[in-house]
Amino acid sequence: MKSKLVIITIALFFLMQKKANAQGMPVYDNTNFVSLVKSLVESAKQTTQLIKTVEFLKQQKENLEKVNTVVRQLKAVREIGRNNQRLISVMQSDLQNILSSPYIKPEEINRVTNSFNSIIDNSLETMDFIDQVLSSDFLKMSDAERARVLKQKELESIEMVSTITLKTKRYRDIISFRKMQDKINNRETGF
Image 1 (tube, one colour):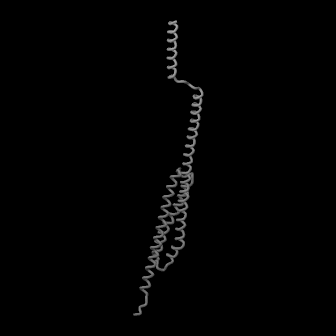
Image 2 (cartoon, one colour):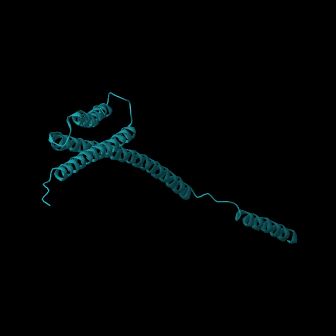
Image 3 (cartoon, rainbow, N blue to C red):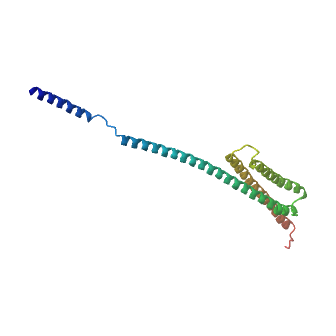
């Protein structure tokens, strides 16, 4: 009986040893594993959707930048048109008054006309160039490059308006000075 008791004790000891070792072994729960895989698949779907959203937002940003450059182009073209309209109105009114003034000498008429004509010719060339730049067949340019060219031409048109304004002011001042000089020279002295 003692030998049976020793055998049972040893057997229990080994059995207890196995239970103690079994506690440190990982246990796989199929339900948790399936849940983990489903969660990973769902995360992958969300990541894919997020990447698609980022690509869509990048495309929309590019579209907005294109619209922005087109708007800048339209503003530049509109401003150039306004400046050319100012040049035309100066030519119609101020140049006619300057040339018809009796205080402009006949030899000055050609010089005045040529200086104004050079500005108008430059303005017309600018409009032709703008027409070529805006046509899609001419000069393979991006919208940003077109916007830069148009902005440069806008600045040039502003400069032309400034130049023609200064010239008309200068000729008016000359006419005013000669008119005053004529009054002084032809005044009646009653002293």
